[in-house]
Length: 393
Image 1 (tube, rainbow, N blue to C red):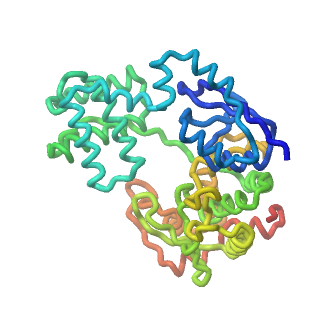
Image 2: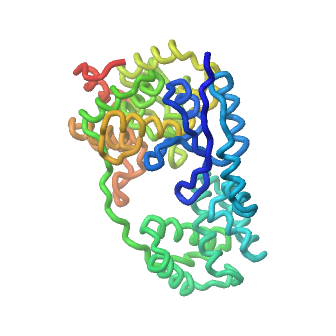
Image 3: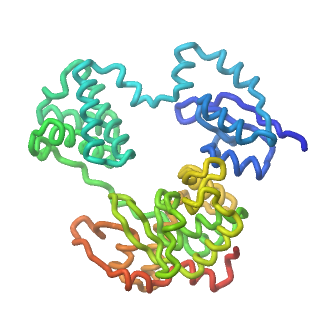
């Protein structure tokens, strides 16, 4: 069998240096590289991955016997980069994180305590990352001034500066205020220190969703049965992509016809209904793919661990392009579509609220509880779509 050549080069994309991968279309190679976090860029018309030696070695190992890398162009490109730029590119440290080296000793200690307290409060890793980055933006601006010496008036002026000069969005402003509030009230213990700092009104953005015809085209664009089963599951149960990849085989309860969603957003467990169509599809998928580790429902074939979130997102993106769906939507649109299609079919919004794992329908609405018995009797929109014979397995 002839080895396929993959040519590597340096790619500047989204203000960051990456490795670009160029090769002839090959389904086997596509499947492997997507499981290693390699992404497709429509604007650059190539595959790309982080400029990190360890990730490149892992990909080389996974493609051993299938493809070989030509690194000559990559080496020449790197030689043209100055030593300082090269270090910055290879480490791929975000600009926000690099700023920590510019902080004075007092503020560096404050940042460490800030992150430590977030971890002690058991905040999620994504929240910690967001809060840390937003807090660093304030530390960068005040330079040598100690963070503990700022007054509420100073913070008000800073937020005006951030919105008017830096041009941050309303959502980013809320995140930054939340980070500042956490430091002064949770770390320093200053009660209601930021309560009188006005918050910008968030824009009312309607969820982006797909209609049933687009859903059918999306599903039919998928050839890989594993990929198909994953997107079927997201739409059938209205899952977040993080909930999908963390599903375990033991979370599928065929007797009670439920899926158990463990420690979802807000660290909240919940049950969602398992449609008969989806159960049959999952059984066929397991019989064909036979997860080796027998833990995760959709495992990485190379590591046996949970399937990478970014890879699932890329699978959706590729299917959307192949199905010629012009809407700029991500995989989360399947969750929005699930809820909207249930509403269209007359399902009580209180039931949908619990199926999605929301704490509130609106910020002012009380939490409504729905029994499991009522939840499992809800018919998944996937079942209706399946009966029309417009999608296949």
